[in-house]
Image 1 (cartoon, each protein chain N blue to C red):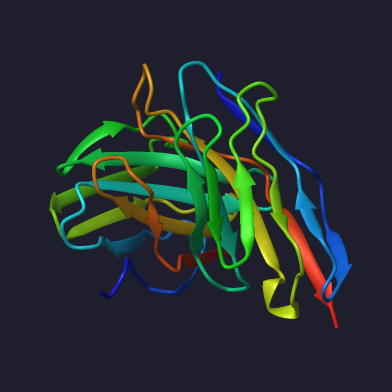
Image 2: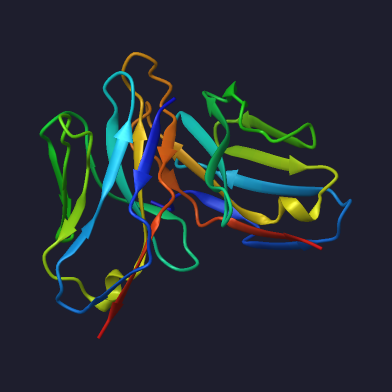
Length: 115
Length: 112
C-alpha cells in the first residue's frame, strides 16, 4: 500500500542554519503531497503542498519540490528561526486512480532550533 | 473563519466509562475525518465521512469505537467502554472536495 517515510528526528539546529527534512513516498497513481506542521499543544497546520510532478510548494520560507523520478518531497528552509521548532509531517493524498482522499502520514520529524 | 472546533480539549476518565468527543467542521466542507495520534503509532485515520455518510471506517480499532455525523456541522466519536490503551490525542479534520485537510486543535484523552 501507499506509504510515506521521513528522516528520523529529532533534528537540532542553530538559528539561521539551513534545514532539510527528507521525505520519500511509495504510491500507485498520482498522489498529491503535503507538509504539515504541528506546534506544541496544537493541531496540524498545512504548511505547503504540491499536486503534480515538478511542482514546488512554498510558504513562510519553506519549500519542497515534488520529484516523481526519486519519489521524494524534501522540505527545505534557508534560515531557520527558534519559532520554527515543531514537528513536521510529510503526507500524501491519493487523488489519482483510487481518489479516496485519505491522507497517509509519515512518522513526523521533530525540529528544535536553538538560539 | 473559526476553523475546526473540537471539544473537550482535555478529557480524563476512568476505565469502563463512556467517552464522547465532538467536532464542528468548517462551514461548507463536505468531508470530515477522525484521526488518533499516539507516540507508538503516530497519526492514524480512524474514519471519514462525505456529506455526513461514513465512507471508510476500516481504521476504527474495534467495536468499542463508533462515530456519527447527524448533520453537516457536527460529528461525534464515542468510545464505550474506554480502556487505558485508548489514551491518545484525537483530531478531527475537514476538507472541501478532498483538497487540503484542516485540523482541529485535538482532544487529549487520558483513560486511567
